Length: 155
Ligand SMILES: [Zn+2]
Image (spheres, rainbow, N blue to C red):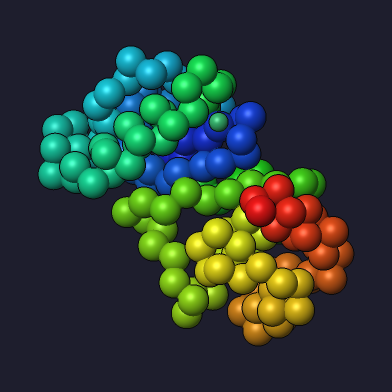
């Protein structure tokens, strides 16, 4: 099943929309504008009214990025923020209806999410988190420099 994600190319941030999106999926990575206020369900139009939380998360995402280039990404399972992709670790997943971060979650592998959502800001704890819960990340020790630079940038 093809799912949609909206992302900001400049901030490297993304919000999962799943089957809801504000445009027809004409192409992977089609650009959106801030005028697309209403999410349209891929499966059933009008469905978005039943999901105000997602509409709110989407609008907050759009507003939060001002004039940054925002794109819709349609994929059935291949994303730039997956650990096998180059520079995947630059991305940050934004909380919304499909992502409610918790310390028990096993798929929080992006360094910025580990820092901002889990509150882990030292490398030893981050490495322990990777080894305990992120089997997809084969060489977590390679992330130390990036992780520490994100911690520094945040401080
Ligand atoms: Zn942005």
